[in-house]
Length: 243
Image 1 (tube, helix red, strand yellow):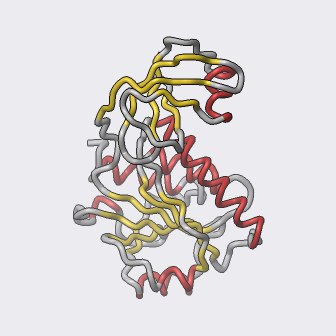
Image 2 (cartoon, one colour):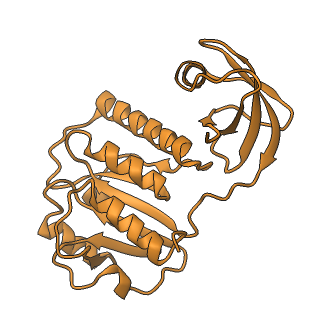
């Protein structure tokens, strides 16, 4: 069985015994049903992986002793940043979860012309916290030790003039270029994708004026939650650690 990979916000040092927070304790004891002496790995987002052994395991309290630290390189050799138009329902949740598994380093939710979801104040703060939890859970599942940053939600017009990162790409079904026609990026890629209904013609024109290259993913139009997965997987196969 795969060794469980668990997040904690605590400082981790070799030889230290820690009491895990309530949520991971419940997951370890009630879902995974682990017992004392079982092995697990811990991470706190600093990029390192901490091997540990369970010392005690009750319903809401789990203690683990850190036995060693290993360098488990799971980060992509190319930094992929994803900017995605906010959509209805769970589309953003799904896209973010899979994008984290595929190696993104940052995520920016955008309010675009065709965004119909109204988020502000407490509702927006709750959604950002929710997306942070999704990113952490995806890191636990995929074995990553660095948590992608979840940026503040921004209006497209405000964000686009500040977006400057390596190779800048925008998915557009009518683009004439495909990913395999582009040069290999040096270090980073910023990928822009619209919400359901896509970005408006005006937004696409503005993005191109700010250095974004339109690319297409084959002859079919993909949903907003499918497009990031397909694009990131293709880029990892072409340029990243799928090779």
